[in-house]
Image (cartoon, rainbow, N blue to C red; front, side, top):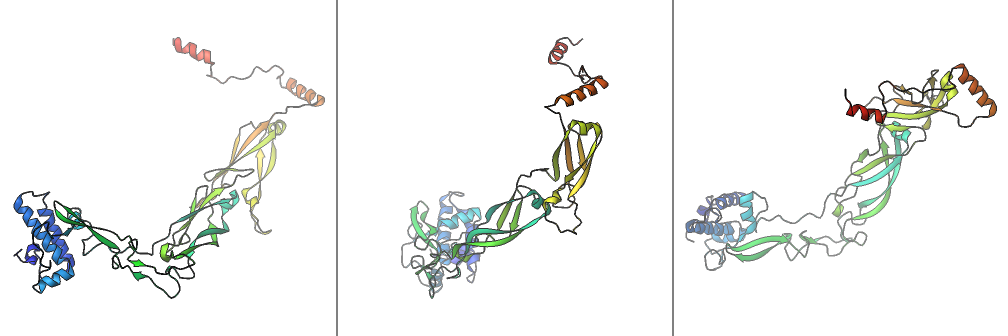
Length: 390
């Protein structure tokens, strides 16, 4: 190769490694045999690849700048020592940032962020509605107190890997029609870390973290519902190598209530009345959801409310009490919906039956014919009308 290597790549002699790599990528896209298969272009591509192999290696470049042979007298020619990195070819076409033999990905860090953790917490309906503070016992990975996350025994430290010399990667050479293709793979000796722990910490076995049970305090905001997750930042698992912890998510599950059921921010309850009370009307004293929360004597919070049942109330009637439901996470408050169910007696003594018959006679209801809603028809009637529309 008689042409100056810097001229082949189109860079100055004082160009840095990034400028050389960019120049090679630009030429590789243009000259690669898959793009231009003619022999002259293929030969040019071989020369450019050989120039990049020299100028991307600090030792070979220094030897070339001194006028020496960076290949140590090896015969020229693509495929006979003109080795290049397959990663650089792929970077040239796909814009990757992997780098070649002289600019690999490098060792992967031992310190990494920990995983998020999830714990489910069951709370009462009133606690979910008005908020509560709970102490939770969690079992997660925490920083090793013996080695403080380094993973080494006391007085020792990680040492560079002798196999990859701290690079975390080793090059594998394979011959192909393009020449010697070098690919970078994680070092098996150090698992890609670039360092080896000669004496692991006995407490954490070199991981930098241990499992521990601890108690944390979580504040459940008012208005949460089943499935709501409360995020506690940096309260999750500590990462390998003593890395920063992940987050802890507390998923809320609401226990079943004896009186109320929840639909969104609304509360529903059912009141059963005897038919005499429904017919005559009455006033009921019912508990509010606040009755489930311990309040001071002078707190002024209403724990009961008056429900007026009008005379003649029918079974299935609903009464809506505005603003007595569950507070919303973003403000406001839902309603309380009370459904009245009229209960018909199933057992009557002789006197009760006598009085009920007298009432039926006074109302002319001894032989009730029932009421059919206007427009309602039997199944057979609807079929008859379907076949006889006129």
